[in-house]
Length: 346
Image 1 (cartoon, rainbow, N blue to C red):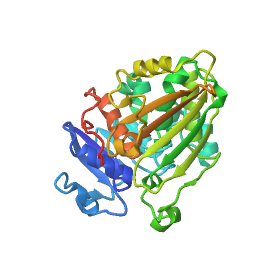
Image 2: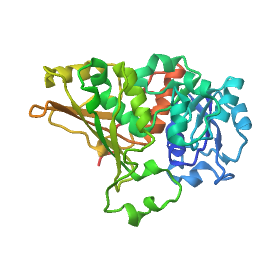
Image 3: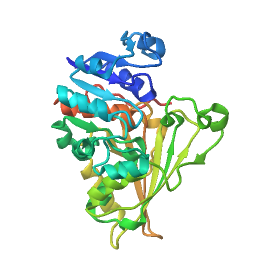
């Protein structure tokens, strides 16, 4: 059994981690930290966990949490992960960071978009970006993994085969994305109130969302050249889920059958990514609570543009499920361990 610490266990991503890890056959929950709920058992904070874990939430110094663990999950707000990751490295504890602090190979990009001075650019540069379908081999040997954001996971999985193939007109990418309210976290804020988000859909972070440079970083690596995108997220009145609809102009001569074969081959060994039949478009409900990503695509012959749709659960494949998938790769277990369940539908 591998001893695991979750720092920030009572936010939505932390709780999702505990939900998944509590049933993982190779994991022992050795430390769960929380300032707000210290002294309470996790199944008191989240009664849905009753019968699965009696682990206590503790207001631990990170050093104490690390002393109990072989791997640590950091479910912290941006700006707080680096100091813990540094200490973990010193102690030989592997790190999976679910925040933004280690996702950027160039820390100057992080500083520009997040408005914070990065305390350890070298650590960020050597952290492995934790998208298993693209970087599985690197993750397997990693000591520090930067778990991707939820929107980037959905968008990159939708575009990776196309960008890798060279079939796309690079300057034409438009990503229209929609997320459930849990993507904003558990803290109280005006836009997350029921009367504000119910029966309402609205764009936010227009031309300025912090996930934009993360998506561009990874698409640029896949394309082998600099990629700039138009990315607009929207908030939907649902608890969980992300749907990305992506529009890209194609180079001359690229046909839909060729693209379908390309996607099927690219994800042939990816257990959680499924290209749906051509007449079946992704629904967020179909992946609800799962680590799955559903994809489909269609070429609009009139415009020579391909339309790609991807659906994930923002808390599972978009955060904690993907973090467990990374854990499995890091310790040499089957990639699907602890994650083999379908979406909850209806």
